[in-house]
Image (cartoon, rainbow, N blue to C red; front, side, top):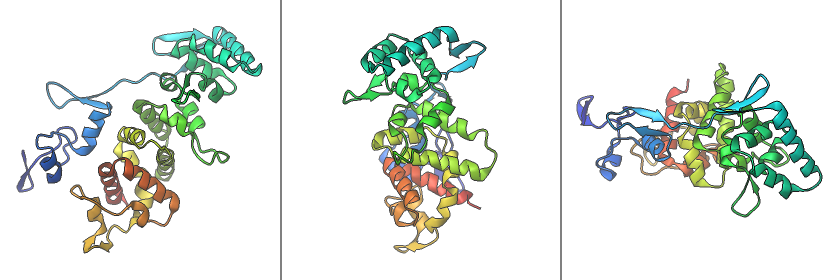
Length: 300
């Protein structure tokens, strides 16, 4: 318990945000706010044994080109060797021998598989040989996906007008660390706030298209909340946060101790924005209340 502006309260040991009374009543011995608790449960961070020290769980190193070799972590292979293997797989695919091509891929290490995906003329086709889904159909290996460069991941995920959507199968194969890395890598080079906001929102659109609400929540928890706020800043002004609803200003429905509130789509005319906010709200209402409130507070 710590003194907080003339009263006694509890702060999260990680981020030092005040933990709402409602959460303390539900989980009396909690040391973490909802956002930080989610990060622990999803494996993004862990609480140190001696004090409130946090470390991120390591993720796979993406493939890089170094001179005449492809490298990831301690693994490396020369272009000549990889090109030979790539040609063998490509020839089998051209001959319609997909099962033989998949069998050959599976004899290789995950690092080599990732390297072959990077080298191939049709990376998605080779990536689909690395695993099978729950129905026995071609799928993406999570370990291989984790080793693909961000530029390739974003290209494969990007919105496809013919498919009328994002490649959600690939998003589902991403670990939380891989998803976080992809989001951060695409945003880090940008210094224009408007451009960053648009790209951040595209990531949220892709995430919202996932049918698996649990996976949606898992990936959502592992993105820096400030990046999520950036994505929503241009849209939160349309939520009418100062409007009076049921005798309360609407922003009260997004407070820490809010029990329930309107679906975001009921407050916004744009159907795309409404769909995204509803899907993420379904994944974690507490986290999205925090993000929406933060975006509103940061809005110019």
